[in-house]
Length: 453
Image (cartoon, rainbow, N blue to C red):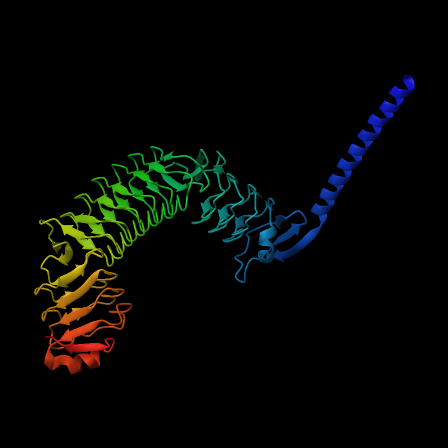
């Protein structure tokens, strides 16, 4: 019996020794892997090396140079799993770790004061970034297109930036700088926030609803661009401006209610919101920017009397749009049967893309605006009166259903090559009998030019 116990003890001891030996070998292998230098180099006062386990180590004292000829570790970016920046380095140059797709951890020392543009863009394996108290500047787009990012944490002693629940703010929390793209759950913007920063929610997919506190006064450039899962946005009652491209490509939005405080809807603000069928523009709005609603799903829109400026292509490509209506008291614009004109109806600004059939331009019109009939595929015939002296670029571009243009002007208007670009190639131009030769010389894009019957 004692002999058997002794044998069992020896077996246990042997197993233990084997386990210890295996662990030792693994650790030795890891240490050896870490010691292996895959690549290395120098840049200014800094040195860098990539170890066998995919760790990029940057050391030295001073700024990271702007690499004009490309990052020195560019050829290895797909294998960089971790970044260790050692104490003494004072800046992280733009694009430094951009598209390091398997990067999962980064250590930023308390000597870094500047983090450049696009540094962590497309680092989809990076879930968390810790900003030390030394950082005083963070570039735009630093964390853009980073679908795995869940949290941006700022040291409490930082005097310029702060964070709350993983969201990046300025120190006073009056500006929301960056919401991590991978963070899940609907979100309410805190009460202190006055402005939503440049690309703050760019391509976030973890929420369907965002509620603004009533302290928010401005939405910055491309703030919610590409948030395709966003279906509801509750605006602040203090909101004044909606920045360029603020909700561009938010295809989940179906309706938006703007508060009566809004004064400007800037260029491309709601462009390509293909499912946005309804929006109410309040009587506080003064300007609507270029292509503000381009390619949206709007069916009808009313311009209030407060609007004094509408940018080019504001409603272009809205294939469901049947009417652009203007309130009668508006001093700058007017509408007739859903078509947008200036107040005196001397300029035809925009024909709704969704309208079909035939159309006769009123005799009061002297100019047809830039892209006025762009992409009106259901339009089959347009009559241009003698009064029209100018036709803007792209005016009838992509009007694939257009069969004829009846132009009553005896002296051909000067047009550019793009006016009928992409229109029906079999389009017939009908003109006064005495003007056929002149139109054939000037409007050579038409294969069929005949006299008006």
